[in-house]
Image (cartoon, rainbow, N blue to C red; front, side):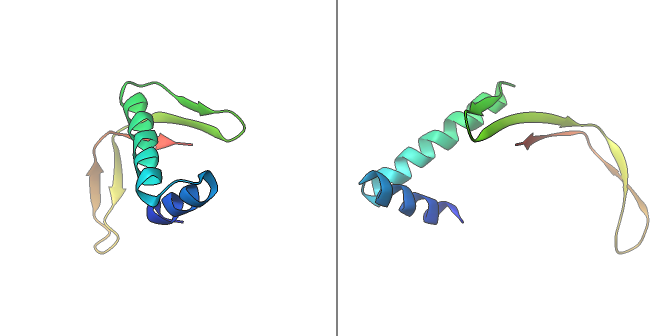
Length: 79
């Protein structure tokens, strides 16, 4: 399910217009993103927890050439 489909489902179940549901969904995603950027976790009881994880720098392999490639450290979201 993609974001527009999710907004449409929210609109139908919550008796909202699609525009209102889209605003609600965007606000929710903005809050989750903001919390993760502050290194906070977001727990939705009965559903799961979003956390930010750090991935260290590592050496990978170019799939076309087989040559080693340096991959920078990064942050990612885990659920």
